[in-house]
Image (cartoon, rainbow, N blue to C red; front, side):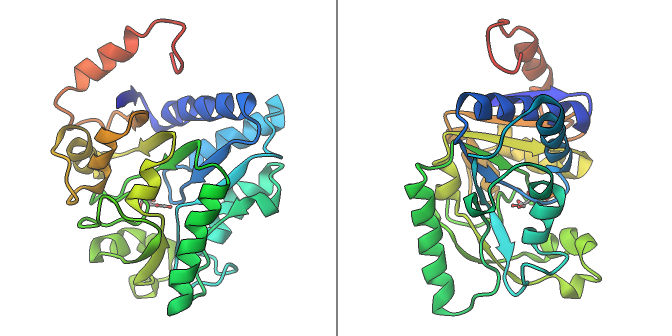
Amino acid sequence: MEVIISADPESASSRAAKHIARLVRTKPEAVLGLATGSTPLLLYKELIRMHRNEGLDFSRVRTFNLDEYLGLAPSHPASYHQFMWKNFFDHININPARTHIPNGLLSGEDVTKFCASYEEEIRLAGGMDLQILGIGSDGHIGFNEPGSSLASRTRIKTLTRRTRSDNARFFRSENDVPHHVITMGIGTIMEAKEVLLLAFGESKATAVAGAVEGPITASNPASILQMHPAAKFHLDESAASRLEKHDYYRWVFEQKPPWQADA
Ligand code: F6R
C-alpha cells in the first residue's frame, strides 16, 4: 500500500489522472471501476481535459460503477447514472454500451439476479484493471458500510444514518436519501488489479488514519486495502492530517527513483 500526500485535491487528482491515463494508453481496452460523489470530480475533470487536449482515447475502455441508489430511476438528478453522464461520460468518447452502472429500479428477486449478473459481467470483461474509490467518513468503500463482510460480493446494502446525512447534500432533504443501494462487494473491489483511493478534507482524516494505520477490520471497510498488493491512497494534507507516519510517507514518495510510476 502506498500513501501519496499532495498539497491539495487538485494536485492529488492530477497525479491519479496521470496514473489512469498511463493505463489507458498502454491498455486501450482497460476495465475501470468508477466511483461517484464529490471526491472524484476533479479527477474526472482532469481526464476530460486529457481527452480534449491530449487525445486520451476512451473508445475501447469498459467501465463498471461501484454503486447506485435503489429506488432512483436513471433520470433522477441524484442518481449515479446522472452523475456519471453529467460529470464524465458526456464529455469523453466512451461507448455507452461499454459502461455499466447498477440498475436502481429493481426489487425482490430481481435485485439478487442483477447482482449475480453484474459480477458475471465483470468476470467476463476480465476483471477490473483499476478501481477508483472514495471513502466515507465512516470508512465505507463503495457502499460497504462498517460491518460489511470483507469477502462480500455485489448485493443490496442498507445505508447508515451517517452516510444518509453525509449524502443529503445531493438531495432536497435527508428524508429523500434512499435507504438501500446496490453496491459492489469488498471482495469484488479487492479483485481489481490496482486500486486508487482518493480522500480529501478533514472530514475524512479519521477514516483514512484507521484504514491506513489501524487494524484490518470490518468496522473500517477501507482497512482491507492493507491486504491489496497494489493500492494507492491519494490524499490531500487535510485527509492525511491524522496519519502518525505522515512524514515517512512523504519521505518515501520523495525518495522514489525517477523510473518509478507516479514520481
Ligand atoms: C460512491 C461511493 C462512496 C463514496 C464515498 C465518499 O460511488 O461508492 O463510497 O466514494 O461515500 O463520498 P464523497 O466523495 O462524496 O465524500
